[in-house]
Length: 103
Image (cartoon, rainbow, N blue to C red; front, side, top):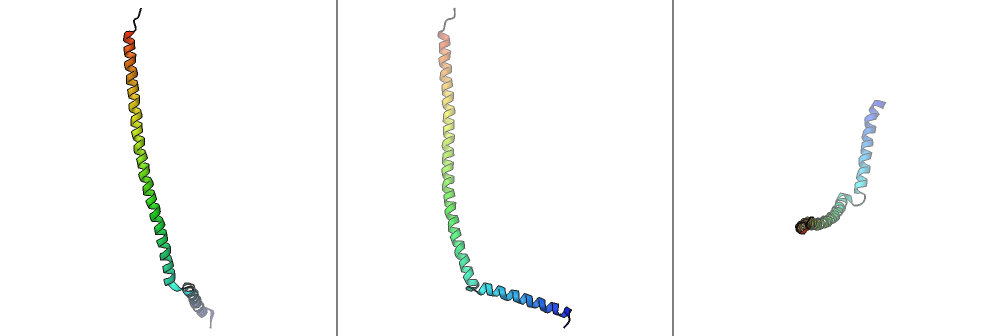
């Protein structure tokens, strides 16, 4: 056999060996179905964790929105109180100015 005719044989044998090792590694510990079932189990666990985290996120989002609305109400209350204090102070100053007699 010449070198040029050995190259395809070596290539085919190498690919066959790789395929054989891949098949042994896949089928070695229970086959594809066992691996698929294991992956499905892991996926279900991760999905449950995700659902729990999503529920927690929604609860926290609702709580934050409630706190933000309370903060807005508090801001409006402080502004209204400031306007009221200014108006009362202005009125008291105005009345006091009218009582003062300049000489």
